[in-house]
Image (cartoon, rainbow, N blue to C red):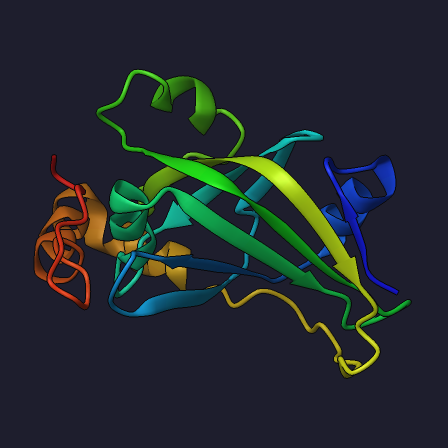
Length: 180
């Protein structure tokens, strides 16, 4: 059944690399908990204790806000085909923006896109697996080709305007730090 370990094994890294969807959870001391599904080619395993997530433009920016005040984060992966398993990564995370010195190096792990909003590095302090016996089988049919073309059509200036409208504060009114 469930196991707790300190780092990712080669088997777990392979599992992560095959998943078309994962979930990100963050929270501040008070206020709403954020839990978001993520897809596309937006997560890279940097080492057995560190992952890099490309946070693409979205309608909210809760994760970035929460990490400014509480740097804890949980990632969850579920096997929807093959052997059942749930994998959770617990740790602390830091957000990087295009204005940050480390952005240029971190960005090389992903295709360059106008829709790239933030990069988040997570240092893993606990890895947990559980059975996943209650998770249904689901068929993966492919990625939705919507976000990339939408962001490209808006262009850099259009996206920055969108960020001003939708990504400056969290649902609870806290600053996201998107513009500093």
